Amino acid sequence: MIFSLHWGQFINTGMVFAMYMKKSFLFSLVCFGLYGCNGGSDNSKTLAEQFKYDPATQVVENDIHDSVFISALDLSGLDNSKIKSISFTINQKIGSYAKPITATYDWQYILTNGLYDASSNRVQLPIFGLYSAYTNEVTVNIQFVDASNYAFQKTIATDTYVDSAGVYDNVGISIKPSATPTYSYFYLKSRLKNPIIMDIDGNVRWDADVKDDSMSTIFKEGKFITGHVKNISINSLSLYGKASPISINGTLMGSDAYFHHNIDQGKHGILIELDGTTDGALKLESFLSEIDTDGKVIKEWDLGKIFSEYMLQEGDDPSNFVRNGADWFHMNAATYDPSDDTLVVSSRENFVVKLDYNTGKLIWLLGDETKHWYSYPSLQKLALSLSFGQTPVGQHAISMTKDGKLMLFNNGRRSFNNPIGTPSGIDLATSQTAIFAIDSQSKTAQVVWSFDDGIYSDICSSIYEDKLAAQGDYLINYAAADNRTRVIIQGINKDKQKLFEFTYPSAIPCATSWNAIQIPLENMHFQ
Image 1 (cartoon, rainbow, N blue to C red):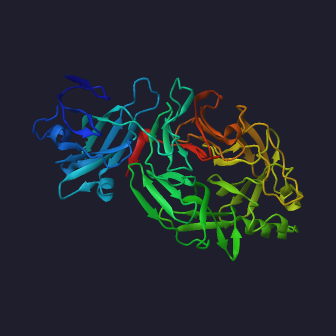
Image 2 (image 1 turned 90 degrees about the vertical axis):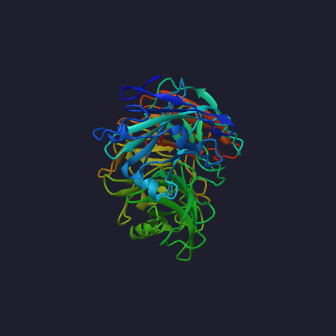
Image 3 (image 1 turned 135 degrees about the horizontal axis):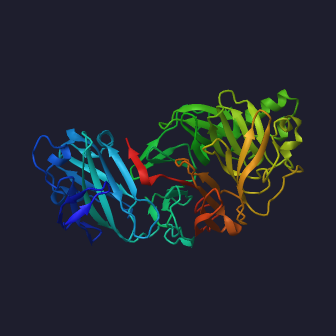
């Protein structure tokens, strides 16, 4: 048979069929290399041309996980001294718009992550992101140290996905894509189980079926890092299902601490939000830490202390604003702004605040000025003047866009926990997503982009930009639509064209997907 590789060369190949099974399904192997499966021994040829290999007998499936989306191939008889990396690609379904899932494992990663058994000279190649109830076509590529490549194909048939939570195997597709956005995959931060990865065609492509609340989750270095909502422990979960714990070291928080809301990218590590006791006081949703991926604390910010000290210096009494033991701040997201070495933090109860990363000095506030916070002259001094657009009201999911602007989901819900007898602010009729251009020197701001689809999602929810693209498309997650009973997930571009739209029921508000963000499964690199 004649096959065409993606680089355009035509090659001769032989096809062999193996009787290996995955969940009672038959699959086949196809081997192809630059000059056939078994090239000559001429030393002038590349390592790939010299490579003598029979995938029919030397490659066996090793179903390493119960999930239908995860499997592995065991490759035996390789000369590991000559291998640079091994990669796999899962070809897309006919008619799909999501790009193929591709992952590359550097040889050093394979050695240091338990994927090579020296005693049997066997490599375990994890495969993740398989289509469920489908015969997946998988291409494996071995790259040698001289940059030559040897590739073979394998088909892996999978069972039907049955979600243990009874939710994610029944997506509603309101708008199918007609083209590929700048991203192809995203994950839902579930409160029912581990994060759920979907593609832009509406297929679930990953669920490890770990029944832990994944509200506080970030994807980093090929792993989901999830903070426990009942204690201070962290779990790391790889895309091929390997779990490992991480301990936090050096926090000022006491042993009663636990995670809430988001984990976001920081300056040096990740920003985590903790509730707990410090300095003898209970701090609720007003304490921020930055840790490295090993759990070591880099820096911490007590927003209650920062605001109290500032207000006292300015002659205000903060006692009815900063209230330890009460959810006066309600931090739900934070992000690092590299343009001026600052943090931007979302206080759902009050405003968005910018502060100096190193000193904690307050720089500006942006929020609904009919709320309680604006009654303090010291806080009025920090308020930005908004020349155009709607101020944030009960916002979530703040982030900095690729060009340095503030993006957020503007829920439009007044304060829940303001002191009795104080103003709680306004409610909006619908929720908006918005981008703000802000001048910190002149303390001015304006909305430069916004989208209002007539949907009200008063709590949770998110919008994020695909930052890996030159002009990335957006992903919107209405976590509490239809009176907090339904999730609506939309892809949208800067021209406000809907690229796709999916829906899920949410019997518990925010539980199905409290937040959603892009994930680059089309180009994973484990190194």
